[in-house]
Image: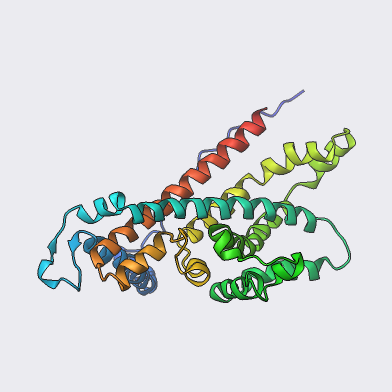
Length: 307
C-alpha cells in the first residue's frame, strides 16, 4: 500500500512588490491620498497642538500686561482649584453613570429585540428615535416637557409638585443622557446578538441548559467585544458632553462638568491658558476612562469565561 506523504506548505511572506515599479511611481500612486491626509492633520491635530501650547502660557485678555510663559501653573490650577477639581469629579461620575446604565438598559432592549414578534421593526425604530434627536433639543425636552414643576409630565403622572432639577440636579442630567445614549448601546449589542452562532445555543438547549446559563456562558462572552466598543465610544463622547449640563442646569447645583467649566473659564473669565490646560486634561481623562473601562470589562468577562 502506497502512502502519500504530505509536504508542509512553504512559508509565504508578504506579497512582493511588483518589479519594475520605481520609488517615484509608488509615491505617484499614493499622491491622491495626500490632500486627505493633510486635511485630517490640519483639522484634528493642529488645533490640539495650539491648545497644548496655549496651556503653558499665562494669557488672560483681562490682564494683557501679565502675559508670558506659565510653565505648569495652569495645570496646577486645574488640580488645586476646588471648582475645577469638583468639575473633574462630576465629569467622572456623570460619564461612569451614563455609560453603565445605558449599557445595562441597552442590553435589555437588545435581548428583547432579538426575539421575533409582531411589530418588531416599528418598536426598533421608536427605540432608536431618541438617539436621532439633536442633543440641545433633547435637553430642552427634558427640562420643559418632563421636569417642569408646573406643567411637566412627571408631576402630572405622579400627581405631585416637585422641582426635579432643584431636588436632584445631577440625576436629572444623567437621566436625560441615559435616555439619549441607550439606543446607541442597544444597536451595538443587537448587532452582537444577531452575529451569535445559533448552533451552539441550540446544542446548549438540547443539553438542558437554562436560559440564564445560555446567557451567562454563551451570550455574555460573545458580547464582550461589543460591550467594550459601546463603553469605549460612550465614554469618549459623554466625557465631553456640554449640551445637557448647559441647557438643564446651566452648570449650577454642583453639576458643572469639565467641558462646562472650560466654557466658563474661556468665555467669562477670559483665561485662555487655564481653559486650554483644562481642555488637555479632558483629552487625557477621555483616554484614561476609556482605557480603564476597556480593561475592566475585559477582565470581568475573562473571569466569567474561565469559571
